[in-house]
Image (cartoon, rainbow, N blue to C red; front, side):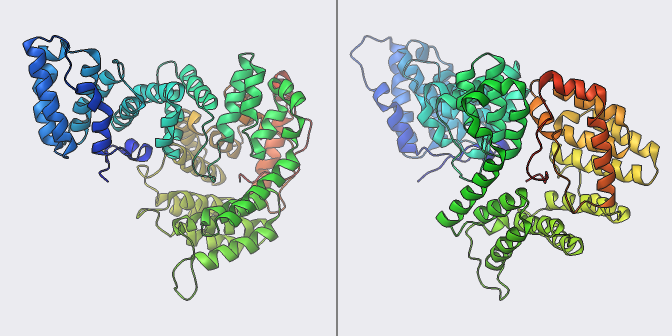
Length: 521
């Protein structure tokens, strides 16, 4: 089967081409059949060229198709054809241009035209989405995705999970970003869209959307979105948020936090049973056990998984997705830390960091290793580890993690000027990772700055849920290092400040103690 392959990085992450040349031809063949209606000589000539191009497309001759249609698209005969025929011509030209080198701009323009003409179908909008994403045109990509969700929901199945996540995240960056993101999520909710992978969780997205629906006074739809939230930490924030009072009243069982932890473990166990060849399923089970403060059970599961993923005798892995093993090793390290076996955990984390990821540096585990080295006081080792991560390799969030760790190290070394410079740099992009900003400020013991940032997050409806989940009175982890205990004490002191207490009381509460320590899983 001929598959469309796009060169743009976002398009590759977003969309796997699913339409064949013959399918494209079928999508337009009825619209370019001869018609008894009177046409001008220019229109008839254009129609003949379009029919020739259609045949070339069916034969896989994309360059020939493009060359035949190029003059037609600029000629006067095209505009004299019926709108449905114009749509078919633009669609064929878009397909041909998309498959011809360096013609993505023309392809996108073609699908922008075909999608709004008579006879357009979901495939026109899907192709518009593909080409928009390939060109990094977030504005039009979000518009096309929203239109698909509203008018052609069946076509959403062609969009990958990573692609949909990119679209929702990208909506923040386009004009009227908050409104556009809301519209896209609301259309996905109405279409009953769900990720294809059972291991991808959208609890954060649905909790935020439920909050926005409540801001708009729509408690009924907010309850629908809230029912899609399954992870405990977002539920903790929702339970503490005054906006969710009507949902809490109508669905109290949803907010049973201890039950949510138990359900998460049950789901993960069921996934492992349903797909024992998935390492990602095993990872989900370990993470669920770790989050519920059951590290001893997690160690057994993770060790069994590693024995199958990386057999000691060099045999083939039992898992179809063995590339997930870096996360498995990271989880084993976290389990060992939770059990008080810090030296072993550090060795496993170093092993994970040294394993490449898709042929490149494993940024996530390298940063995690540096963070652990920093918290146990191995500051120079942490700096050496951080130096391995080039800024070009890290995501926006990863860069904030890297800078936060460097600021913490500078503060511990007594380098106030160095810490201040790093904090000033971080302030420019603090929205990429507000928790990392707060962590760096806490390391520098700037409690006033932490309080101001926390209060601003509580006041902002878009960040309130995360902030409320952060300030709940989680039990103290038994494996905290000496430096982590210092940071926790500073955090508790900040949360006890009258100005912070007043900010919490204005929008929510900090009255219930979550059942387990927060571990980030």
